[in-house]
Image (cartoon, rainbow, N blue to C red):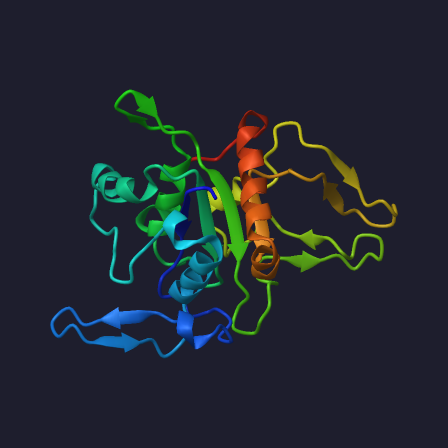
Length: 243
């Protein structure tokens, strides 16, 4: 199994609440040491669930609930995140409906910074870290839906295709949108039925390998390996590494 760094929004509660209670976050009071179970599922609960699926020894944790980037310099941000990203080969982004704070610049949010640093090639001694593979796992919202990310075509010939608006999706960070449909010479074609204007992209069209939670939990190793295969062909993509 690859070494996986998980980036997620700890306190996002706009997620499906049916996840088993045992995965819900546990908070420890820093003064009394008393642990208290969260009263709802959050991004941290899904990080716990995904960690169990892929194996604890190969998982690196993301944002903590009380962290903030406000007032930190570029160097301070990098020094804080470096131990988390160090030595990982895959960045798994838990994509949830409330992961993005619309009122805070993306440069001041943990997740886009974690993602961009994991895509950098950074010298460490005599070695340079390689760009991580990028795997996005979409979590259903509180209504159990994925339509905040995916749409469906009304055409009978391509109704089975998950559609995503790269440019106008407000729930995705810019660095994620920039790694969708970014194969330099990717193959595209029109709907096979020829009755709609939907553009159909060949497999491997994006550096971001994007799957639903159901798809991931059914075959986690397959999707991790798929992201790594895309990474191995990274020169075919125009990889977005800025926020």
